[in-house]
Amino acid sequence: MKLDKSLLSGSTTLLVLKLLEDGDKYGYQMTEELRRRSDHTFDLKSGTLYPLLHTLEQKGYITAWEEPSEASRPRRYYHLTDAGRKQLTEKETEWKAYAAAMTKVLKGGKGYA
Amino acid sequence: MKLDKSLLSGSTTLLVLKLLEDGDKYGYQMTEELRRRSDHTFDLKSGTLYPLLHTLEQKGYITAWEEPSEASRPRRYYHLTDAGRKQLTEKETEWKAYAAAMTKVLKGGKGYA
DNA sequence: TTGACATATGTAGATTGCCGATATATTATA
DNA sequence: TATAATATATCGGCAATCTACATATGTCAA
Image 1: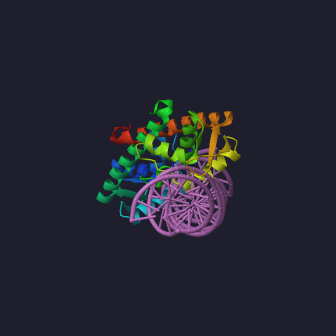
Image 2: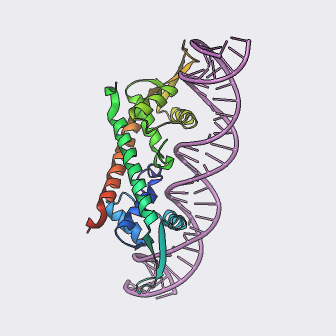
Image 3: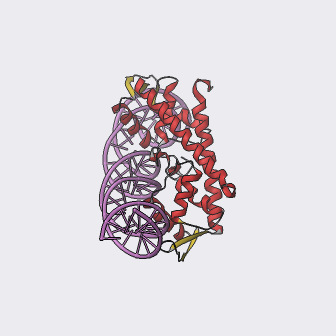
């Protein structure tokens, strides 16, 4: 990421699950799409993405299958499960609470009682 | 924190510097104020706060002095330096960029082109 | 008077999340 | 034939935070 990487911590799972919400995708594709959808703010590394995908699969949030490609080596597609969808909702709620609290503190200043 | 702790990563520095923006404070006070200003969302642990304060002091973002207290053991007050104020501005800008990108991705969905 | 609680600061060890570096495979193209 | 783009993967390491513990001071109740 361009940003101080430590700002990102924990939200990568949320982002990946979110990308899978509107259709099955393979890893490399997620990296590209995330970069695009975030206006080049997020630049997911393969060393972060692939281990994460394996973890999410183990936890039952996503399932995977291999598909040959004429353009490259075979692609590993991922599909969001019901459990994954539930997890996505939870993480999204958590993010909103976190962002709201941050905003509150940053706006706070001398105005707090 | 109540939230998945990993969501918080990296923003603790920003929060602490922000608290010091409107006046010198001691550690325990920052914990309480942060809890209050965030509606109990952020609950900074002493094991996180005190080492962080020492690091920020080493980096020259804050300075410290000891003050006796009638009500408890002596308090260690911290003051935001000019360098700290500059760092605060940078971290705040970074946070906004990060939050904006997150919002973009989370709103995205099937609508992206 | 001692034991619990609130206030206040601190360290040590463990865990976790992410990254950089590296490796490998396939196809296209220079 | 070598370099780049696409695509997946592992390993070692670092940084940030937490849990648990330790310590010090004052107050209040049993």
